[in-house]
Length: 583
Image (tube, rainbow, N blue to C red; front, side, top):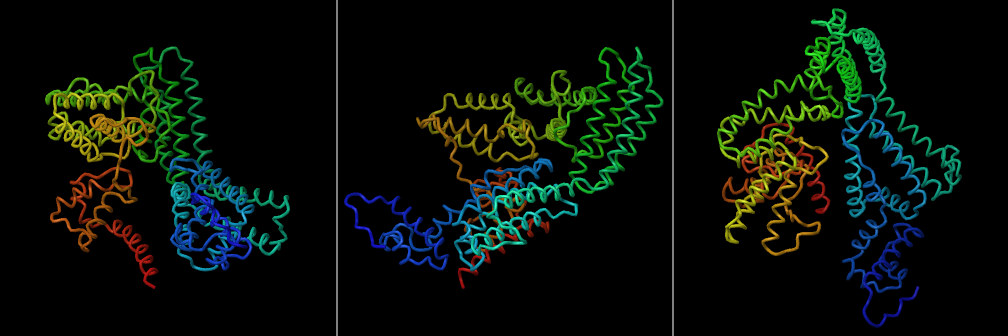
């Protein structure tokens, strides 16, 4: 193909770049990856070979641009999300659709077929780079699905890997050799339909095998028999006009049986998914019985109290594995509220003693007040957060909280993202800025921004799980105030310019990693204090939070083996890349 004559006027750089990328695709489809030479690409595109160096810095840059444009996996994977609280059914549906969509896309994309052939035929640094990025994106799905298959006989990653490899192989056999596999010709529509159906079946079999072991099948009927007996007793009790002064003797016996049998059933289960499913059914059923037995018009509720005691036993044994979404019965909440309100009165006195604003005290009381409110539905997540919340407040109110700023830091560390707290904090900060000159105002806002970021985390939970974190909320407001002082526009997505780096390490791993680099001479900070301050300011842990300088300092010399196992994996990857470049 002759080189096109140079057009007069301004060159269209983007059009030329796209023509080179299209030329790479054409050559790849016709000749394969071995035909990707500069002269071939120049000839195919009708453009000067010199422009490849100018626009792409060379053949490697052009290949990278082509691969990134044509590799459908990255945008493809971003369409699929899972969280570690998703059910086995969600995992099954997600991976079924993902693999079926992959087959459709790969079968119809000749360029992607050639890219996969190239990837498995020879080492290429660019393809390896894209492949690693693809794997990292896919790892998010696997990390979310791994807990569902833990302690089962199913290696789900292997199932997906075999299905993915099989799809690639069968499509490539059909498209490059025009041959069949096991008598299956994917150019036939009926065989394509059968393949899609089989993919769904195999993912389903894996999920079913993980979720439905014999032990859960045995435990559920046994539990159902016990609850059937309980339902019969409760039904008889509900026919009585007045409840007895003491609990029904037969109900007492059944409650004792439940206290023994529920833990035993849980111990017989094989994985966390089974345990959560079983406990969800148990707690839901106990809650229904408590609601039936609780009669607000009466002063005593001995039968309901008895089943509340069973529920408390379950909670005590399995506090960390109860499903977050389970709704707790109102009588249980009233039971708990009585003790918690006594603790709150003691805490309130301590806060008043150090002159905490009454409005802030009311804002802090809000999570506690919800427990006894008849209109509020309290889930297990809410109750679990409240237990952590109150425990931290109790332990740190004496001695730690000496002023309002101390309480601010504590509430931020507790993830208390309620509007009442945010409103009070911003109002207090605004009041403190009044009368300051511009220089002092800027310093005060920077100090507040840093204090919010460096608040020591007390829990990875937040009061309202679906709402933005308190740190994000407060920093947005502070950043808006900073822009207001600079007369900059407040709208747009870039209200906060956060230049700190996100990492996949927890605070202990991050601290040790930075200390290792300091010891190796990569940093030149003169003191540990200066070094930890900079680590705190410039890095976030895997929860998206900047650790405080004190937290980094306390973890510089971690002894736990798990820390260094994580870092060893990172170092090994870095060493592989360095060794490859030095070959």
